[in-house]
Image 1 (spheres, rainbow, N blue to C red):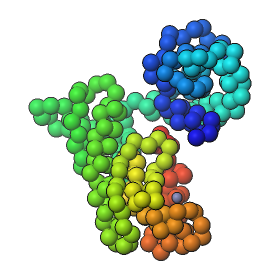
Image 2: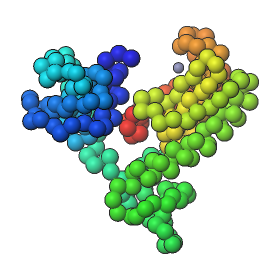
Image 3: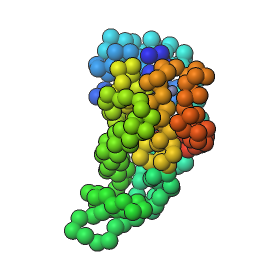
Image 4: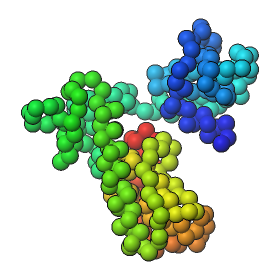
Length: 245
Ligand SMILES: [Zn+2]
């Protein structure tokens, strides 16, 4: 994994178990972590840039690392600025992407326990106040783990491409992947996208089991089974950020 990739991942995943922060220097907070193996720069959701110093590292070396990654930090800040404010917290009334539509989180009819609905789907929540996002995303992931393998088996039968195993994961940076041994991994967030986008990603991975590359032959195979793939790619480009990807 390149330094750049590592940084992109850590953008969403600040290191746990960090030590108490020394004073900020130049807008960057330096934190020492006994668990970190490498220097790492992250941008937290609150806009704080954090440079993590590994157990045997030095502040001076961390400063050098930061200096080498100022471009990355500028891009990450620009990306963060484009995100709508407060988009990270979900409450009643928030519109979230669900089944391909921006859908309002509504309080479900009074029951014994608090529940919210998104269109026709009902989800139990611990309470109506507070951030509903962690609970709802956990529900979405559970749905994904049921629905996405089922759909993959269907499309595997339709295309005649043999699949050994389907895993559904929490991938921050990709929609799907596959391995030569016939395993397809899918991002649970595909339950939030329109069906044609979900299907395209599955077809895309299925065709990779025939062509492990992005050659013209690969795209011809995709075109054959999923003629709407260009629309799906466009949708992903336009809306991927709604999913925090
Ligand atoms: Zn691909």
